[in-house]
Image 1 (cartoon, rainbow, N blue to C red):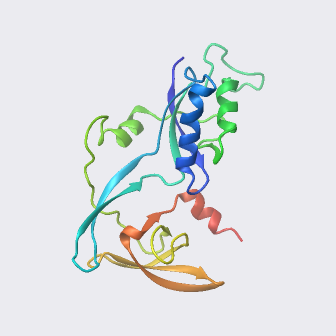
Image 2: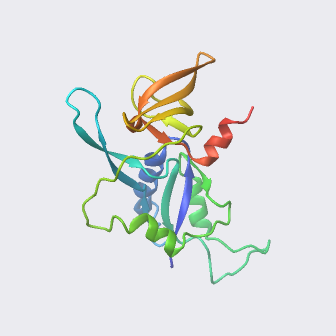
Amino acid sequence: MEKQWFVLHTLTGQELKVQKSILARIQLERMEDYIGRCVIPTEKVKVTDKKPGHKKRTFTRRIFPGYVLAELALYDEAKGLDENGKKAIYERTWQFLRDTPGMIGFVGGERPLPLTKAELDAIFNDKPTGSSDVARPKVVFSVDETVKIIDGAFMGLTGQVSMVDPDKDKLKVEVNIFNRKVQVDVESWQVEKVPIEETFESLKP
């Protein structure tokens, strides 16, 4: 069966849980023909630690928080269209993914489009299989951008960037603490960008 790459949407912070569940169950449920590789795209980010000593540190950041890439045989090309006039899918693949804890669904709905070669090249070409990781420069943040704090005393809180100090590699982030808006200071490596879908969700009343 021909497999194609699709983007799976996961619950916040459960990318690894989804990946492990899929990989652990492939052989157990004899899904090798339907499910291939499953990856969480990451990159090495190098920053200068502003703590005493000013040491440079490298850490791994998820490129697409809340998403996992999976190689799937999803569409049954031999069957063509289903009774609703939509592309027929392999029920085994669909049910397997529905039973995956932490997975919300496909990016693109129930009949998603696979990633194109150009999209795959953009994700994978900078880090071919077997090559060593190369640290990239730190991610640039903008005022009013929504971010999640992933390290330090305020870890787990989501807020909006109110100030960026590129020289000191620091940000001010406005978060809600005890139902009050508070500005907290964080290093740029202590936050990650929040996906657009989660940003819109946080704005709902």
